[in-house]
Image 1 (cartoon, helix red, strand yellow):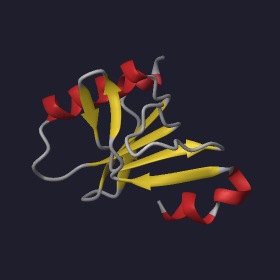
Image 2 (cartoon, rainbow, N blue to C red):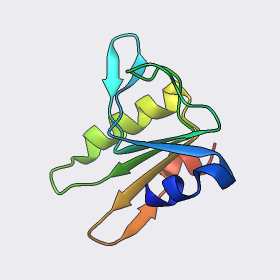
Image 3 (cartoon, rainbow, N blue to C red):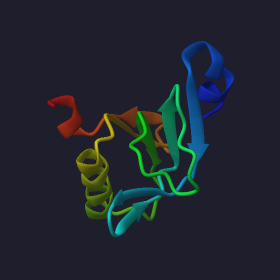
Length: 100
């Protein structure tokens, strides 16, 4: 998040930690970080897809729950999703995203 905050003027991004995003009429998700380019939503609950959603894994995360969340993000139209594993300090794009 620091990178996006520090470069918001030069690359036109705004990062929001733990922001509530309405991905379906009756479903809300809270990405660890969501990044918008140039414009930012003006509502308390965001209803437009961010450019990037970042999920940071915890030891309690289940693969099936994470996949459901990633599917919601894709169906909502978020073009990029990063999954970060703090234990290994690695980040990955979900496999489905690589082939779309």
